[in-house]
Length: 239
Image (cartoon, rainbow, N blue to C red; front, side, top):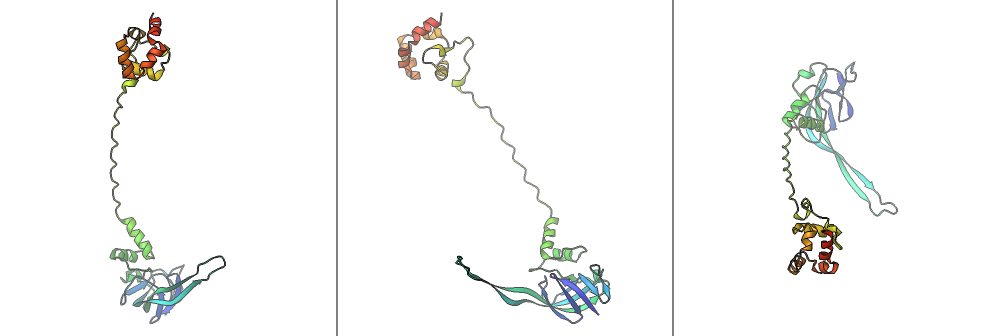
């Protein structure tokens, strides 16, 4: 009896005792594996697979195919050329048995294509119904089934503290005069006067020479007081 199986993207017509070189599967020499993708057994044709059919085989060795050379020649206006060699990884197996029925209960490890070997959990999943047919897919399924780590709790943002009020920006006291009416006094200079406690024309009108000296040095506008005549202006505005 013969069967047609599929593995590694290829189809093989096999009979008991045949030796095949197939795309590498995840198994070691001496392992017994079972191919579950069976397209035909004897006169039974699958749609597309024959249900509960299987082909069992013994792994003889893990081998490599003939070396192939890929050469990219140097082209005009291009100064590089490249030569690469490749040997395809293969598995040598011997067909031992063809099962028309009962493949699902045989207990033989499923032949899973892949360049490496799988963990016990991945093998168990591969033998289960509807398992991934490649090692990469099986690894992805294993990662997806693993419990997800809880996201670390976000640190609470520090409470915003009120910014200290700037002394220069403190509002003028109630009843303060508009000192900007004095010649040469703008908003910035008015704030400096308010910060020094000068808020009315009457205060400036009452300045003595000592006051002019003190405030002039303190606020760096002594020359402006005398030049602009603030005291005389304040006396007129205070009336």
